[in-house]
Picture 1 (cartoon, rainbow, N blue to C red):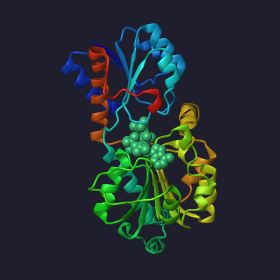
Picture 2: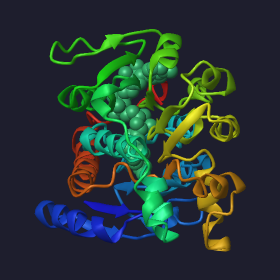
Picture 3: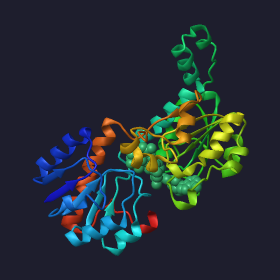
Length: 333
Ligand code: NAD
Ligand code: COI
C-alpha cells in the first residue's frame, strides 16, 4: 500500500524504510509537517503518518477526504493538537502510539529532578564564569529523602513511580483513576494534599482543556516553599506567568520544563526568527534553577523505533481490517 509520512526526521527514516521494505509498501517520506498547504503531497496514498506538535487542522482533514484518504496515524502519544470534530466530520480515522516507551519520559522527568536537586545549573553557571571555588558550594539533596508528588498515574506516571520506588523516594500520587498495581508503592492523596506535602511535583497528565493551568497561581501558593515543579506533560498545564513569579520569590525552588506553554507559537515562528523569541522562554533560560528542554522527553532510540513501527502497523490494520487498537476516539481526545 502507498503511505505518505510527514514530519519525518533523519532518525526515523531507517525505521520507516525497514517497515516499508518488509511489508512491500510504497513509502513517500517528507520532512514537511502536515498542513493544509502540504497535505496534497499524499495524493494516491491509502494512509498518512505524521509527527508534529503543531495543530492538525480541519482543512487538512477536508483535503484528506477529497483525496480519498481516511487514515491518519500519529507517531506519538498526545492528541491534544488534533481537531477531532473535523476528523469525525470528514470520516478520518486517527490513531496514536499509546505507549512507545513510557520509560523514556519517566526517565527524563527523573533527570530533571536530579539536575535540580543537585543544583547543577548553579554549578555550571559558576564554572562557565571561572568561579571554580563557588561552584563547589552548592550542596545537593538526595532524592530518597524527598517526597515526590506524581500527578497522573497512567502509563508514564506508573513507570516513574516504579523508578522512584527503586530509589527509595516517598511517593504521593493523585489521579481520579488510581492504579491498582500491587507492586507500586505510593500514597494516594488528594490534589491539594499532594501540592501541600510534596518536595517535587511532576505532571503526567494529558493537555485536555479541563487541565489547562491546573498549576496556576493558587495551586503554586499551596505548594511547599522552595518546592520543585517538573512538566513533561503538556504545554497548557502550567500558568507560566504564575510560575515565573513564584521562581522570582523563591516559592518555587526550581522547575524542569520539557513542554513550554508557548512552544507551538514559538515553533511556528522559528523559521522567521531563527530562535524562540518568547520573553518568558528567555526569562526561564536565564535562570540557573530552571532546566528547559525542547519537548524531547520522549526522544530515545527505543521510542523512535516503536513510534514508527506502531504507526505503520496501525495504517495497515485500518486498511486491512478497518480497525486499529490504536484508534483514538473524540471523547478520549
Ligand atoms: P495515560 O493516558 O496512560 O495516563 C494519563 C493519566 O492522567 C490517566 O490515568 C488520567 O486519569 C490522568 N489524569 C488526567 N487528568 C488528570 C488530572 N487533572 N489530575 C490527575 N490525573 C489526571 O497517559 P501517559 O502515557 O501516561 O502520558 C501522559 C501524558 O504525557 C500524555 O497525555 C502526553 O501529554 C504526555 N507525553 C509527553 C511526552 C514528551 O515527550 N514530553 C511524550 C509522551 C507523552
Ligand atoms: C507525545 O508523544 O505525545 C509527545 O509529547 C512527543 C512528541 C509529540 C514530541
